[in-house]
Length: 155
Image 1: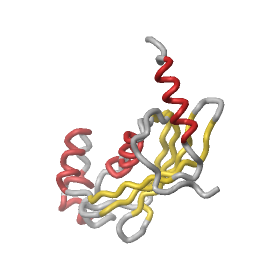
Image 2 (image 1 turned 90 degrees about the vertical axis):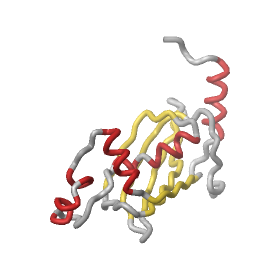
Image 3 (image 1 turned 90 degrees about the horizontal axis):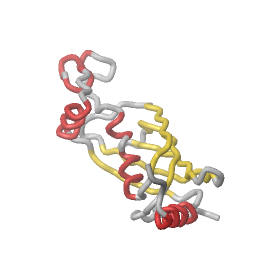
């Protein structure tokens, strides 16, 4: 395996230098039954909680729920627009997401690891009622940002 080219190393350094602690990025989407079906088919997650209306009606959530990794993957939408290569990801699933829910994902730069050239991030995903459904943290390497932050960080 070859190492990164000098041009790539320069690009990665520029992206790292441009990242500012406190910057936020937001993405919002509504989850449909089609999203659920496609995700379950693609991943093989055929859990009754997601696909069986009768089973789910008698389960703790009272109806089918969206697989947790589907809304959790909203952080990868933001990351993809940043050319972000994740080195680690951690998720805490706090509440169910249902078909028809609109989820807002806010990613915030929380730190920079100068020695390893990693950006550290936190994400909070909330439903349309403002309830937190997922908390996440992750770290990795921004390489080619194509997404502007919501606003500059407060100094």
